[in-house]
Amino acid sequence: MALYDYHCQDCGEQFTQSEHISDHTSALQGSASPLRCPKCNSQHIESMVSAAYVHTSKKS
Image (tube, rainbow, N blue to C red):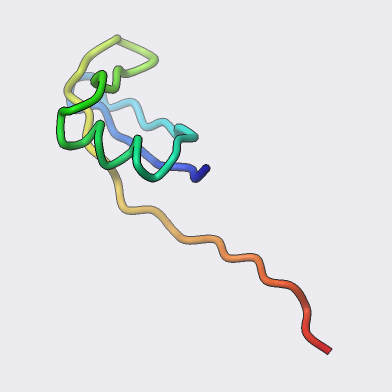
């Protein structure tokens, strides 16, 4: 699972949601249940570009 950042176009709320990659792409294309803002319950949500975090094991 990955963390995705979203922005509500109605109230300006920014929030992060944990979801599978396939769920993320389906929701943005409208084939899954639409995302809702946790503050105002709006469906006018857009995905935000966020920083990537990569954790690798230390190699000897």
